[in-house]
Image (cartoon, rainbow, N blue to C red):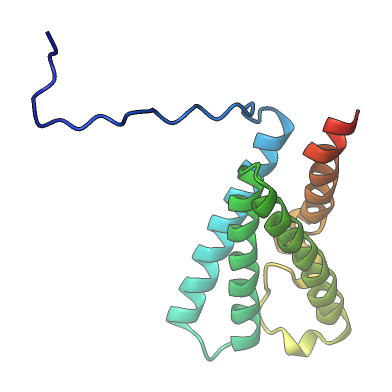
Length: 152
């Protein structure tokens, strides 16, 4: 005798559980740091753009671009699929180019940055985490490459 109501629909074949192991340790820590930076950069840039957009529009918009890249990187690094790994690679490489470009630009032409961005002065306002993070992201993506691990 079934305890389910007669109108309950049960799938004929339940979905198999994902056999891939969960990521622990350094990978989770990296995703956590990316997530914190994504939240901080998003909150700061949105607040600045809403309250004083005319003071330093370039800096505030660059901070918003950085925030979006951090959000994308956070989500992509948290997943293990082929497509998400490609997105993670793209996000981390764009982040690296961004922090180096904006960082050097802010040193060479400080008048263009009356207010700091996430990436200005190579992430100085964030303890240089924005400078170090893409290198850690690249190292993690290289180390955790499923294709390389499968070949071993």
